[in-house]
Length: 124
Image (tube, rainbow, N blue to C red; front, side, top):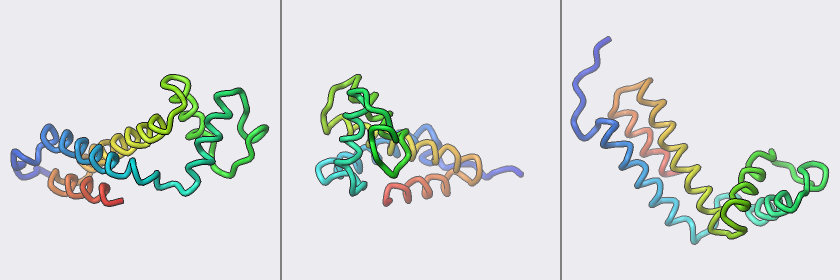
């Protein structure tokens, strides 16, 4: 199945940087308003405790999976214990998610629909 020629503005080389910039702008806009997680303080506390040597499910009683807390503890170890590190990590993860899902959509649908799908992710 041959695909129709793509409009120059819908090529991934143009759309991907625009999506990354839009995702970063959305993340920046939400940065001062808190993370979507209502238990932000619990996640930050768990990461800080991991950084000090505590172990998930032994020393830290929590109901979510530990990967995010360990990843955030790694960010704290590398960049310091600051709320900006947590919010920057969340922004980077959001931008990467939008770009990876756009790349996956490109393999399944035409570039215009993949771009529309990626733009719809920004509304989440």
